[in-house]
Each structure stands twice: as C-alpha cells, then as structure tokens.
Image (cartoon, rainbow, N blue to C red):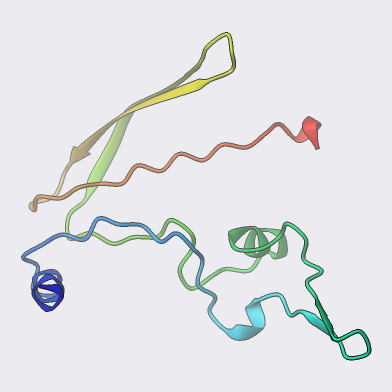
Length: 120
C-alpha cells in the first residue's frame, strides 16, 4: 500500500500534511564539523547545544529545508490567535485555522516557545 500512497500524493489524490522534524542543509559545509583528536582517538563536538535547527539559527545559515517545513496542495489562513497563561505558568494557545484553498487538507499547527533571555 506504500506505492499507492505515494501515487496518491504525486497525482494530487491525497494531500500531504506532515512537517519535517529536522533541518536539511543546502550543502555539507553548512553543518558543524567535529574535530578529530587522533592522539586521544576522540571526536569532539564543540557546537554544544547549537545542533539541529539551533546551529543554523546561531550561524545565520539558511537551510535547504528548515525544521517544521511542509507542503500542501491547498492553503490555510490563521486567525483569532490567542495565548493565555494560568497561575501555574501553563500556557494555552488557541487559533482558528481555515482551509482557504480548493482542496481538502489537514494543517499542522506549530507553536514555538522560548524562555526569557533573562534566564540565560
């Protein structure tokens, strides 16, 4: 059934709705290069926490396909976006998604959060 699923996507009989869980570079040199210490027989990854999409953000490198990238045969409009935190600091995000295209489809809503810079 995998072949049928691919054919359905290629011929527009099904609408892709997933998002990439990783970042694809334009070229290999856009990736962090580990240092190989032959004397210790170790590989040192000096990028620290700047890996995946964080590496591209930190270095100002535009990837071929960024984290969260996805395609669709239809289009969507986002409206009525609202975020609210409760007393415990839990945040609820609401958004209305409207299919504005001519084809049926499913949209993957992505929400990104970060700690305040003051927390380091």
